[in-house]
Length: 232
Ligand SMILES: Nc1ncnc2c1ncn2[C@@H]1O[C@H](COP(=O)(O)OP(=O)(O)OP(=O)(O)O)[C@@H](O)[C@H]1O
Ligand SMILES: O=P(O)(O)OC[C@H]1O[C@H](OP(=O)(O)OP(=O)(O)O)[C@H](O)[C@@H]1O
Image (cartoon, rainbow, N blue to C red; front, side):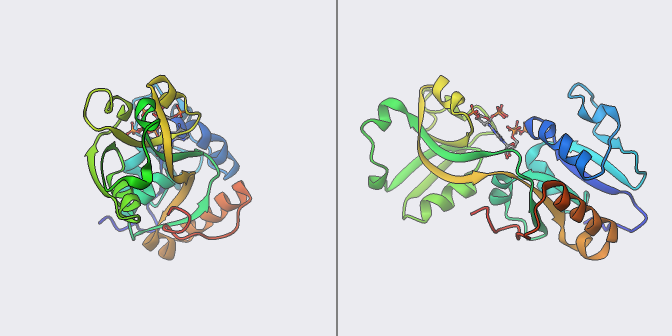
């Protein structure tokens, strides 16, 4: 595990993709001003300077933000509560709900199946998902055994191609489900993006604690949440 020293720049991990666009104004409000390439989706760079030599940004996949911060390779990150719930890293502290990346994690199935289906009667389900742990835990809570087929995207194809009759995926507008003939049958959790911090770095580095406060002020949010609270 990388041990951050007070002299090394503080590294903030931000996911590429949709969260990046929503995170940019928030970073600015927290006083972080990255070089222009950071907001350019076409840039192939992965590490970016800011106007503060003590702060650098990295752009990584959403699921990898949690891994970088949990191992101390980055001290702070921005990540969806869906990802936090799936990994449940004890090294991560999630003190601020950033109020961006609103969506929900839901169970969906083909409209034809839903019209004659009763979720209360399920004892075993086969589900295609990027979230096998959250899915299994959700069904186990009501005594249903979930057999998960792990996919990294395009879960919506699974029912029509016979991979699994149901999926667990993120839903926002509902358009992706609709355009693929699926309907939502159960909500598992509401999702927003959280600021995550490496617990050891939070205790040992004053710059980390100061930046957490800057993010709190930036979202006007003051109540601390642990990594497990609010993420079911
Ligand atoms: N439709 C959505 N509306 C709002 N937020 C979303 C939506 N889909 C995903 N998110 C949030 O954004 C995060 C990243 O999702 P995204 O779909 O960009 O990842 P991805 O493209 O699957 O990532 P990668 O390609 O790196 O695996 C999710 O973990 C979730 O918290
Ligand atoms: O309800 P909607 O508004 O249609 O949003 C839901 C879609 O958004 C996410 O995918 P994303 O667009 O990030 O693409 P990806 O799965 O290819 O990353 C998610 O995996 C759904 O497919």
